[in-house]
Image (cartoon, rainbow, N blue to C red; front, side, top):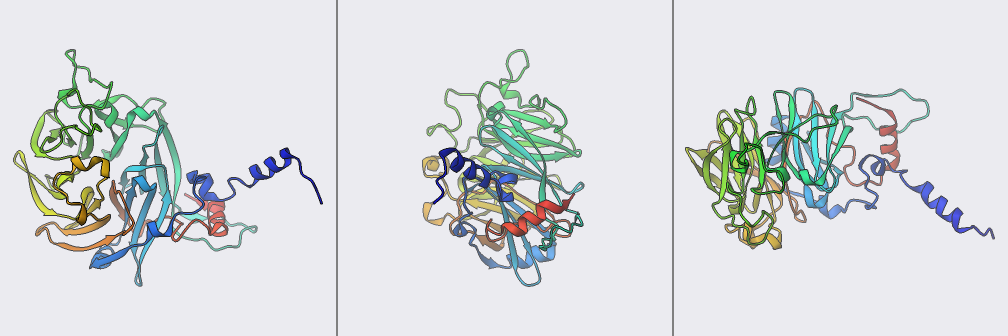
Amino acid sequence: MIVRSKSEILWEAQNRLYRNPSQVVYDTTAWKDVDKESLRFRLTGSFADILSKAKITLFVTREYEHLVIALRATSTALRQSFISLPHPSGLTVNRESKTVYIVSTRNPNQIWEWKPVTSLLERSDATQNASGKYLVPTRTKFFSGAHYFHDLAIIQNKLFAVSVGQNGIVHVQFESPRTDRLVWWPRCIERKDGTPNTKANFIQLNSIAPGKTLRNSYFTASSETISKRRPGHLNYPVDKKGVVFSGKTREVIARGLTRPHSARLVKNTIWVDNSGYGEVGVIDGNRFQSVTRLPGWTRGLCVVNNILFVGTSRVLPRYKKYAPGIHSASQQCGIHAVDVKSGTVLGALIWPNGNQIFSIDFMSSDSTDGFIYEKGMKNIKRARNFFYRYKV
């Protein structure tokens, strides 16, 4: 019997680490495998047909479950793939450059850049087939946790992020060591000298409806005033306190929302999730007009042709006061396909054991198949081969 020293046992354990590409790429050392129950879904209506006809891959962040999901419809089934990232929230797609950006909002924050693989290197030492236009990370950048990034947006082919912790918008530049300077903020958080007050999260500024420029864009927040209580406090007032800001004037243009999220600009119309009432709708004049109500906390929104893809989440029990219009029995975690003109729900994908959705966006399914992991992270040989040979 060979007796090994404590040092040898330690070295052997260390040598076994980071052999699975999922640990190297996504640092999922805390996960032996993603729970299959978290991935189980059911379809209603024509959801799969809608994805198929639109020829898109739909991306969804599920923040508290540390999951980013990719959905696409083939001729035979709806395919679901995924990656695991620390608390992913904002996600946006630059469809011109075929690039996906994702925020991880654990401390410190990270912003990830992903691109689809174009081909695989010819190698004589790799035989396992792992072909596919899967997304791989190409760059990531770290930021202090105080940024507390939420929504992301592409404007004039540049990446912008909502720095909730600083009450403003940051231009994200991977090449620059400094990207923490605010390039836009609402007038209500200015000091007397015109500079923004960035010492705390005062108004929960959280989403961008991107226009052609920042001045042509719109922004949502839970409040328009700085008060003694901060967003996140259980008694922070939210009911009908939410607002929409104009990028041009930096003033409020619409009021009466409750914890608004995921504002999007479609043909000069501002669409927004009125989260606290489980609604999605438009800004009509200076007020919110509901188009439909869905079963849960509405967050995540993108528009493809004449279809809205809207996310619903379960209300976190400690924040139930933030959702005065949502009944606990009706909550679902899922994506709902809604007709823009009628507000009719045409179909949905529901994760029965899902929790929180944050962002939704899409890319042409001709450009990407999503992620390499579909049923779990245990198929190490296939993943090793893919990450060993990919070219972007």
